[in-house]
Length: 78
Image (cartoon, rainbow, N blue to C red):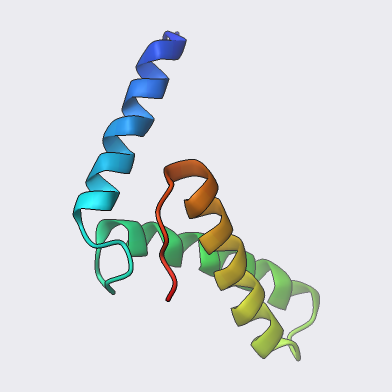
């Protein structure tokens, strides 16, 4: 079992790596996390209604950007 401080430190290391790698830049470490989160949301929305592709794309990117801000304090969208 991990100690709480180890998890906290691990998240700080990830956050530092994301901030150092230009998070808004396509291909950056943070951007790759953003894209994976966005696609998970996108695919979940489309599994409910395949006609809502524009909504799925926007909602997926918005959800990913919110997660990245809350969890890692990085901005992945312009």
